[in-house]
Image (tube, rainbow, N blue to C red; front, side, top):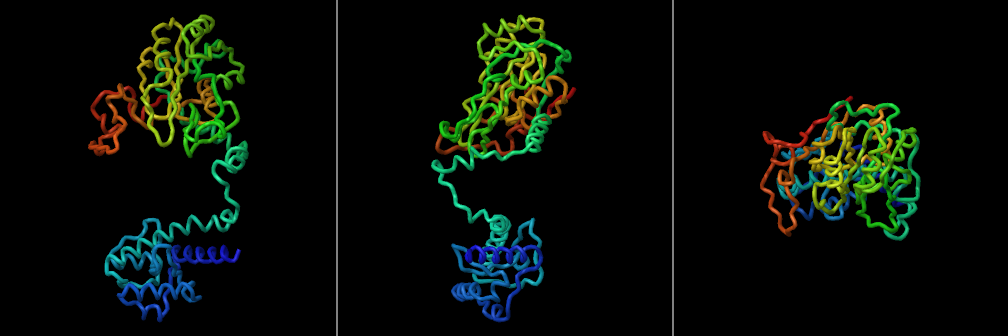
Length: 392
């Protein structure tokens, strides 16, 4: 506890210095400011153990025993302080050991110390660093996956974000919103199937059509599918929960409108094998076999995807890993309870050859410079351009 209190005091003093108070230096410290590295190190070590040095925010890092200087002091040597830091007043100027290079190194150390202080100080105040840490793979299940860290306000925000970010790529013949009382054929595994991620069973990189795999993954218990959300709204459905054509055609014959879903997954630490949705062929076949009934395609994507199937669809909705409220947001948009307002944050290419392919070699050379993403397709045809999006 004493050690934590001392750390807290040091961080508070660092914070005070970087918010405008500035570290002050005693006359003895100024007198000992010689260009000899050993002298500077010794001065820092003695300062760090004395009360007067503590008040001047002098500190040592694990890799260096040089004194921490202020951004103002760094500026007087020609080094640029952190843009987000207010240069404190009263800081001395002049060169430390090593001339300009030594001054630049000390200025950088001061900036890093200030940034670290802004992160660590709230953790110390909240007592987080004093709590016992869990051991990954052994005792982290409860705090990471069993705790329910949400509120109705969080859920409402997640739903609002999912609705606002849903992109309407196409809407011919005003296929959307769905007519009130319309009977819907809901086709494809991506519309109906959801196996919750089990951290005890699945790899840490496992993702699904609603969340990305990896360290940013969120495991949730509620059903995020479109089928669940439409049922809750009393929509009459004929569901074909597979990616097979025969049962899909049977469901289509009993409906007024067809809604088909496709999805793709992505994970941290690995590339997607292609830009195709898992149901790319299924959606293409539905378009070829469609009747006069409107065909609406819902794509659940982790990024840019190929949309060859869109040419035979009347309407296309695109949603990017919208989390547990994915189905609710899609149902609101499909039924007209919400108007889609999302805009594409990426360009959807006509073919994979129009993109920069993943590199599988140990040494990769990328020579395109800034000609990536939409910049690489300026003046060239694309499926849907960056920034595209429709509304009702």
